[in-house]
Image 1 (cartoon, rainbow, N blue to C red):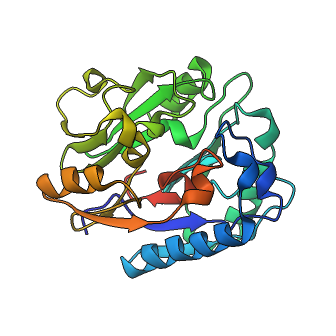
Image 2 (cartoon, rainbow, N blue to C red; image 1 turned 135 degrees about the vertical axis):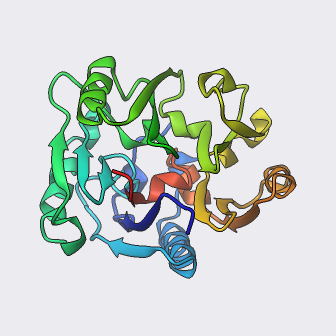
Length: 264
């Protein structure tokens, strides 16, 4: 399998999900029951593509906790536990650390912590092949957090990307074989020299938050035919999933899981 991970953590939405932090105009119209159904479909797709899904319980005190990508960057040998830039989410990472200690897969993974005054959220981290990682300096991840990450991952090339997005992965995602999907109007491809690009228009930017499933299969949100066409032209097979209720919460396809990276 050519993907960067074989296992991923997920957490279903809690009943408090409708109180999540979001700037989406339809945020007040979140349908919780539909969100649960969409999450189940998402998990099913991961399993169908050979990913070992590790399900954690919902966290009622943290409305945004369904967005599992953000609390940490997990690996089979080491994990970096972040520190949220979004104040209302602080505490999620502590819950995750407690849960990780109880899971056999993570027994050998040494947890490292981003400390005050650093902030680092997983949505700002894009891991690529060849031990290369890009991290967004955003409203959620600050320079101190990035420096700490670079220190922890001293054997990897960690490149900082300044972004006005609240997370870097809102505008780009790594696929495979030095190729990424990107919306150049909101994230310049100049930040990623040497890579190849599947370029989307700004109106399709939501689909540039994509998850590579392996064997040229790419999970994207449904309803973006131009993105599907672009992926097919580049030799990939788009796999669509309906995530409308998570879009309303300012979340995308990558946000709903935390991969356990093989190279970390």
